[in-house]
Each structure stands twice: as C-alpha cells, then as structure tokens.
Image (cartoon, rainbow, N blue to C red):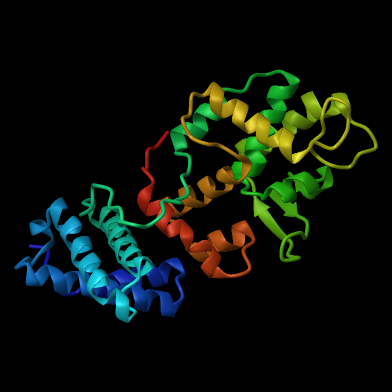
Length: 295
C-alpha cells in the first residue's frame, strides 16, 4: 500500500537534488501536502486509490474556492495552476522512481490561457536529422541541428559562432558573450562533432570567404536568422511534424530531454547559459508534460 505519509518530504528531497532553490521546494511541498490533505477528506488513504476523476474534482474544489473568495482577493488562477503543476511534477517523480505515474490525463484550468510551450520528442528530432541529405545544404542542415539542438545555442549565439570556437580535440564549443554578457563552453559528443566537421569539409569550404562566421550561405555571406528558421521549418515539414517548429524550440527540446534523462537542473542551467536557476525551472514542467519516447 503506497500511503502518503512520507511523500512530500522525499519529493522535495528529489527536487533539491535536481537543483531547485529551497524556497521553490518548500512551495512544492506545501502544495503537495494540500493535495494530500484534500484526498484524505475524500477518504483516500494511498496512491492506489487515486483515480483520474479525482484530479478534476480537486481542480473544481480549488475553482470553487476561487469563485467564493474572488471579491476579497481569493485564490488566483495562477495559484490553481501551480497546484496542477505540482501534481504533474509529482506524477513525473513517481514515474521515474516507481514506474507508475498517478496522472495520465491532461488537466486544464478554466479561464487560464493556454500558452504552454510544446517541445519536440526524441523521435521527431531523429526524423528531422533523417530528413537531411548529403548535398551541401544537407550537410549544413545537420550542422544547424547539431548547434541549435545538440548544443542548445540561442539563435544569436549560433549566428556569432566562428570556426575557431569549435575545439574538436577537447570536445568543447565556445559560446561567445551575448545575452547577459556571459560566455561558456558547451560539451559536444562524437556525432555532433562529425556533423560539424562534415559541414566544414563538404559545404562551408565551397563558399568560404573572408567572412569569419561558421554558418555561410551559398554566396559566402553570414547566414541570417530567417534562413536558419526556414531550414528548420523545411526539415520539420519534410518530417511531417505537426507542430510550429522554430530555432528556439530546438533549445527547449534538448533542455527537456536532458532533464528527462536525469541531468541535474543546475547542470542544464550552465549548459544553456542561464544567469539564474529559476530561468531553467520551466523545463521541469515541460519534462513532466512531454512524452518520453525513445529513439
């Protein structure tokens, strides 16, 4: 019987190990305790007794409290959403540690605008790689995926990239200062380095000029952000991916996949070049809400 007694504490310990700030883990613990307390009022004493309608009932419970107290500054929609996010993350924790999530359906908060970031799954990323060919543009397409997905660079960072920023011997990519005026080194695996080398050998070398940037167009000029986005959209369309795919979505996707694979959130924050850990914590929600299909 999976009783509730120790779950809030061990859940927050897990969040701490992922690198969440103490104030954030306390908030998650309090919201999980609130959910468990409500479950007990429904005479539910262990995880096995939770059914999917209970989540909708809990949301309705919070919404009723919001409606009753709205004139006196009662619960906000964001407060309700934070409880739903806590349940989703707790369900993700159970899936990873016990192989049995408690939440298998989507919960939508009435009146809340749906502006949720959708990320690409690993099979979709694989489809995009497989949609490239061995033409000069195909080699460049794979290098684009390597830089903006595998290395997680921002659009501007990739546009400023120069060949001498790539250290193949050390397996590191230097990201020059840009947003937040911060530089960093990003690790590269063998596949990523192979794609970059092939682009330099079979594509970039055909168009190389005095221009120092890594990505060039067929005239030897620096590639534009629009061109990169168009190539990514082309690969997505060719892969029949039914999502709005753009360059920053690749960055969202690799961060989500790394978290799903168990990388600590602090390491992901350094990988992405975030100035604060809070900027990275959105990926905990994305990881909880994104299918974990393998390739």
